[in-house]
Structure formats: structure tokens, C-alpha cells
Image (cartoon, rainbow, N blue to C red; front, side):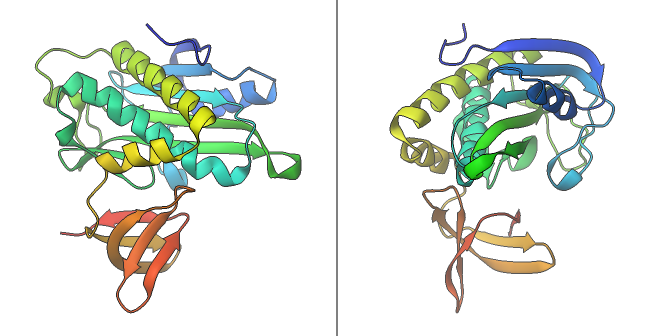
Length: 246
């Protein structure tokens, strides 16, 4: 059963162009925090940086609406919180959290391959405060459409339903969101790091046309990546595409 920290209202549709686009319209119309759009498939699903997210039937595609009454600088914290909620939901189905890795900023890897991703889009109002935040999630449950991806059903002994993963995620998200509002980011940060690649892991980061190589140090109090670069010390990365190096 879902906890009551957020009152979730899930609107299920068979197919939609994009759950993100559908929910952003609802957000502008004044839909409350906790409104969720879930689709059986998407015609124009997308991930970060506008990439296509292939969306066949059998997987989880949904977007959820938040009105967190915080400033835009906190979006990074909510991004990591969302990824953590999914890692914990998937861990419950797998029975083994060691198979999961969180790759900054919001990819979920299963046995080293991508099984889920998130996209965050927001409207910033006066004073730099967030008017609404829409978090889109895609999880490969029964089908792995990505060449380098993997699906959850390959690693579970019993069948896993889309609704089971959805409810587990929303329950975990509600709990973590309540803790974040009450205690700040540090408990979320510590839990996220428990799923992350270890300090010293070799990474490369693409920021526009710029490429930086180094090792993972940690994440800071805003959710930024701290990259240790030879000869340059610790660099703070607020946004970018991370690649794990062998």
C-alpha cells in the first residue's frame, strides 16, 4: 500500500505521444502535486538531451508532478532522490541490491547495463522558485529496446508486473521525499552513494563539446558530481553525460 506523504493520483492511458508532454499540460492547468500520467506505450518518448526513448508495451512509462516549493538549485537533489527511489524499488523485486548501480545523474544500471532512466523538466517562477517539476521515468521490465540495455525480467525468478514496480517506486519516492523535506538532502545523499560506483572509479564526462576525464570522488550537498582530475584537482560538475571507463 502506498504511504500517504503524497496523495498519488494515477491516470493510466493505453498510448500517448509522451507522458512528459501530457503531464506538463496538466501542470499548467493547475493539477496538484502527486498527479501521475502512466502509458502502456509512447509514440514519441524521450530521455535526457532530447534522445528518443523507445517505448514498446510491457515496460513502465510514467511522469509524476511535484510542486516542491523550493528553489531551482535543489533540482539536482530531487533528481538523485528519484533515482534512489527506483533503485530501492527494483532492489525489492530483485532481492539483491548488489546488481544495481546508480550512475550520476539519474541512470539506473542493472548488472552494468542501463535498465531505467529519468528526465526532469520544470517551470521556474518569481524569485527562482520551482512552480512545478515533472519527473519522467522509463523502466525496462519485460522488454529491453536498447542495444546495450537490459530488462528486469531477465534477473527475477518470478514475473514482475508494471503496476508492482510503479507502486513500489511511488511508495519509496513518497518516503524519501518526506525525509528530504524534514531532514534535508544528507540522508538521501548517503543512501544514493551506497548504490554508486566506488570512489576512485574511472569516469569521463561530456559537457557540450568539452570532455573531462578523471575519477569519481563523491557528490556534494547540491547533488553535483565531484570529479578528481589529474593536475586539476576536484572539479564540480553540475550537468553532463557520464561514461564509466574500464
